Image (cartoon, rainbow, N blue to C red; front, side, top):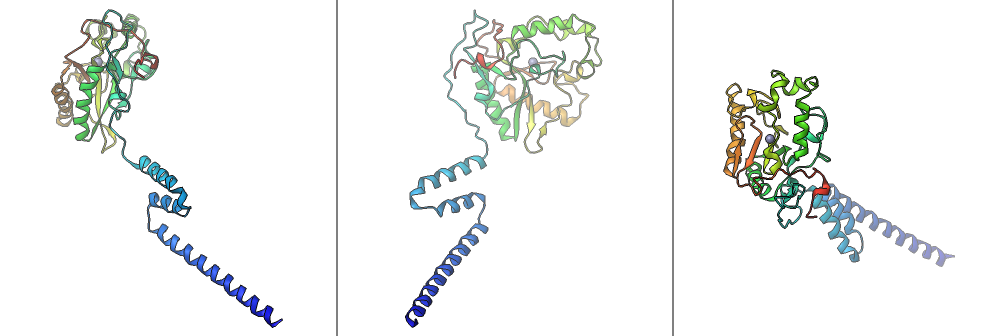
Length: 298
Ligand SMILES: [Zn+2]
């Protein structure tokens, strides 16, 4: 009986030691966790696993770093430039999606929505995408880099515009009773005077080197104030219109000066419109759809 008591006491002491040791280890780990950020918390949890999980630790840590890092501005994919056949208006081979060249670009493709001067999705815009010729997109990426350094992101309203979309505009302009969007886009102009002054049978956009853009202020998280809105028909949209505030005028000139520096020609009547002057297809008005199915390089 005495021997059994001693044995029981020894077992009890051993158990107590094990429990104390466990509590001590737990406390140490909790202290580490309290003093660390979310990334190292995940690492610590993983570190409790066996040494054979080292690769898993690296994997999980890497994943956390990826999701918390700033978005990369490197090209998402490697594009080998090709050429379109200038005699085939449906050949999109020489075109790229702008966001494949400029990953942080903001797309607000109005003609793929009902919020435009027509009030309907425009023919040819099957998806809210923005294509340009490879050459124009490359030049635009250089402008985007400079804007980025000034804390602005490019926002695209329109880029390549199929000929079938331009024909939609012309058809709409002949229906003088349809003035659904007058209030926002042409409040001071009679619809009968739009064709000729603002709408024509051909648009430079169909050649794939013209973009409609503005700037997004990444610090203030809003569009830069240009003193006017995209596709407003009127003198207010002339880039050099002096009726806007000095700040609005300066913003227009900032956009204009950087775009000109990288080979784009400003439009005299629309502050948002710029054409890359070294056009690879100066005489072709393309009409392939604005759609993922027009991508030829991936
Ligand atoms: Zn334009």
